[in-house]
Length: 390
Image (cartoon, rainbow, N blue to C red; front, side, top):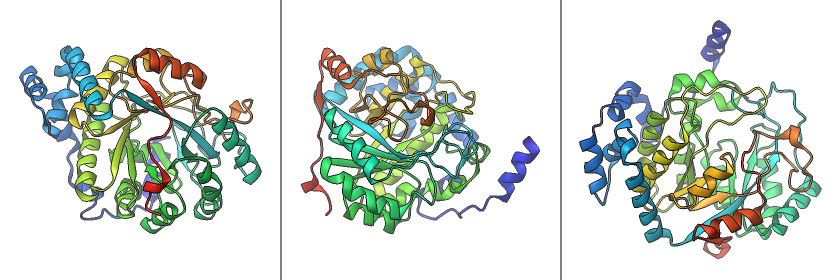
């Protein structure tokens, strides 16, 4: 099997690294040196980072290090304080809208992977209208469009569907295959506000081991997608790694470098970070690097202490108990009552179509009660079409 995998990896046609974009940085990065950066941190390094009001990447490395684990309660308290200062008592809710589970990629951790024997569905206009109305009835005003990656669900499809969706929602984001900068600009012109592109892992070798076929196997093209999003002037850029594919600390450190690169180059955009952990799915894998609940809390607090203006997002991948306590950790955005299969809101019986298994299945009304019990207020709308570049 390893020989077969290696042969496929050698056959992949990779885009070259681009000078001035983040792939150029990754090309020169030493993974082992970055790992040593957080492994070698001491308690004194952690104390120094906690004493600061403005923290750099070296401080972030200290806060995610094993040496910081005894300081978890102090980190969470500071994280909550910073979040309240910047964002107030609010938590914004959104819903993912899956347009299609058709996919031409072979990804080891995803239920949509092309070799998985699941039913495939791409929503047509009639089915999409039913989904939109079902989501609106739940109160959502911010949705995230999600698809598998295939040429059949690409720019011509998005050009048809986004104008049908946008009039119903104040904020429209998408998490689809990487596109060219001109495509992002065009989608912005017809209603797109934000784009999320998760790198999954920043370690090239590991990335290629888990992406064996399809356009997603092009490491550099995906890596530079946030640069192209910024060049298009998209309002919000979302980053994330799939926690479990690689050492979660080193991947997170690489993402911190990525964030700072983007903030310097595309300062007109705002930024968000998500924390997806590997979840069970059809044909799924066992995580290489398990991150415990306590370590995830440490990572969340470290991100907030690293950047007080950053939007932090938590999905229904996590358990109801974890999400109950997470409201006060520094999150600004949460999904609720998510359906990870096309048509799932209008027809809840299509479990065989889902991308991964969600954990928090509570209805949105219960999520709202939970948030208010934690002393926070639910926000349905934090963006207005009048503010968009249209």
